Image: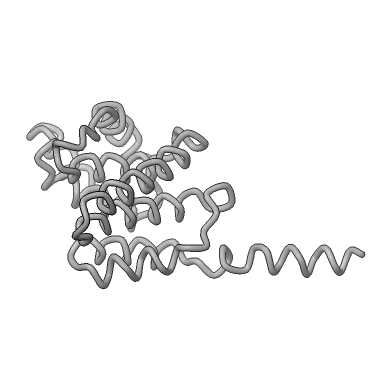
Length: 167
């Protein structure tokens, strides 16, 4: 019986275990530039469970929101965007202090078209990112955040200097 449970557990978690966070981050960065990279990100993360791997699910959510810009049908655009937004909010609700998820939402809100009205969490997310940034141990994540924040129009010049000085 124990062996059967172990096999079931391994099968149930296999897709989650094969995900490499650094590779997901690289796919996310590439997804911001073209449709095929965006599709690759979403497809690679299609089986991710937000309860098991909320960070990967957050990247999936952002990929879905980015993918919306490539659809022609306005209804498909809105539905895909909203589905991604909802998934990201679920991930954040369960992991409210996760800086990486809050950064993803901040970036998504900065890049979302204004008519969508998706900007309600920007100031809180930005404050958490600024506060937590010096304590981040993951150098790849830290550089990803820094490079985005120094070029983002929603970040004040004084805040950009802060990120530039705290590499």
